[in-house]
Image (cartoon, rainbow, N blue to C red; front, side, top):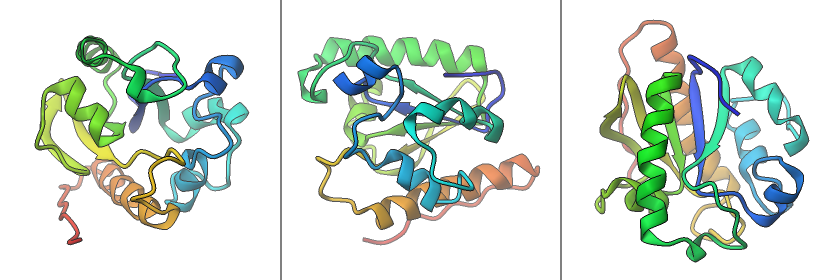
Length: 176
């Protein structure tokens, strides 16, 4: 679900089985993407996965690194991630979002060969798009709570908003 010139293009790892069955991104009930998107201020209300097209009205879109649906991301091969990174680069170059937000640091590392990447803004740019790595909102990611994820998503929202208004973007990395 992309359009030209989005403020932020969120990029999940790959569709889960529920997403594949429904056609709606982050559709599994335990996934925290939609609540975190709202808590962080990207949306004025909590959207349901079936309402994903409404994101376009906020200048937001969603895609995936890998198109193949699996029950778990660890079922994907290294080759699928690398090919997904190549295809994602082409997609971002074509659709020109302001920010590419990869949801999952492990997926970003695998897709772009950046083993040292951490959650937060990256030095890498894809075309004219800046890149931000966000924590994976899967219920399996116990390292991040909805509240801590929402803070990281909000940092991206603030950076994307500052960029929209032509201001310089100054981003600091919080201490753990």
